[in-house]
Picture 1 (tube, each protein chain N blue to C red):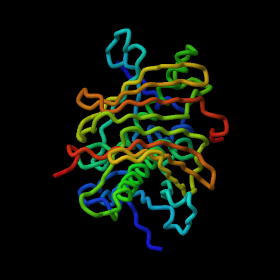
Picture 2 (picture 1 turned 90 degrees about the horizontal axis):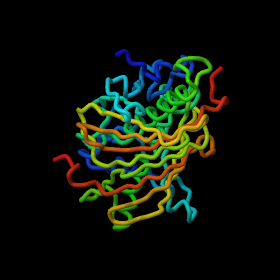
Picture 3 (picture 1 turned 45 degrees about the vertical axis):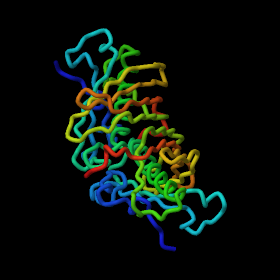
Length: 166
Length: 166
């Protein structure tokens, strides 16, 4: 099935995020999508978002373990991307349609539950605990080898007009 | 006054952190130190830690503003560095003495209060809200042009032996 990556639907002028912007060649370029597009169509999965990321060798905390700042960054971008996707869904609109719905992070909380091993692709799963027009709250787990190593909450709010590049 | 950077006192084998490790050439290499070493010796400042960081041009969220994941990363490393420094102080020991005191992040909470402008050196100030032998809690502000753009809390815990490279 063709996956629609949320972040690739952002308008070009809003696609320079270091964590997930398709126009930021030096960034992480995280790609989030609806869990259903991976072929899993349980009722629970239908409301979940997913993303994967392979840390680079330099992304260490202590040797052998992934840096917490990278994990926080992935949670951040998966959260705002998921928020945008849910906002489009709530409006019954396809992503990438105009006017763009873009969210930024008001608050980010991360709990590090276990050291995250290097050399393993990380999986992020997002679920929604609150969905309003201007505020979406996303709960996210980060797993390595099917073990949840970190969990986080992103309080995402609709991007203020003042941040929009002209 | 000669500044003693906390992260430069970590043993070599614990200095590969992407956010602050002196042995990670691709990382941010954040440097934290006691506020008093900047020459400010108010009673309040004596208990504060400080660090500065100039985001790179690629560290954008929306064009013109700093990526929240970088801000979270800086808070993370300033928090664990400050925790280590406070732990040494609490034991009456100079940093870099053996056995090393190294902390990792159990939880990281960040509130983004205002968009953080690019092109400005960021200042992080840390204060301590809890100091125990194995747990230190650090409250951190991130300012640009003397405006607090983000604040965060790092719950730092003493690094478990299992994470220590042999």
